Image (cartoon, rainbow, N blue to C red; front, side, top):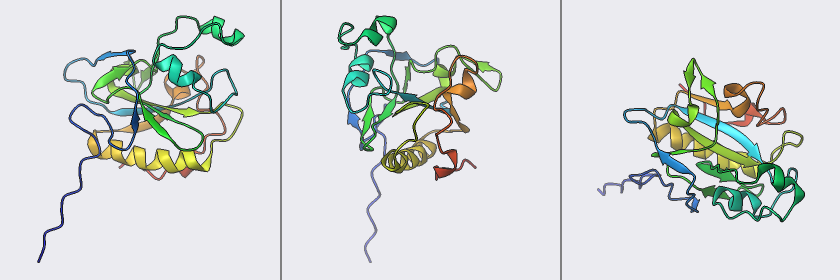
Length: 186
């Protein structure tokens, strides 16, 4: 009788996901000590707005965006942001920040009377806008990612950016199909 080999952990010791393309962002820092990762925040992003499949989001998150390449970029010039994960329209998964570090994705935010959601959350950006549905490929990547995060960290909730920054943010927007997530939280 053979003993089945243990499956490799999805995340390494610092929180890089083995199945994701890794493009480290400088826009992150240490989480506060003794703060558990309990929240996942779903966002949407496209640069310029409504334009998909280019590299502008990647360039923004890695501080390589050419601010003069599009008039829209003048309004965000110098912005230093990131997310842990970015899911492209074709389902490609890119990781910019290991889960052990704090990505700069939520800004001024509150969840269950706790401020500074970046301290205790994982940020997932979906390539999209509030105005269009997300793709089947994105949901097919997002659902297992949520399951892997839930297995690795004590996740208590999955919310939209609009839930933690109401009045300031609207993403992931009305076309995000929450019911399609196969990652119910116990």
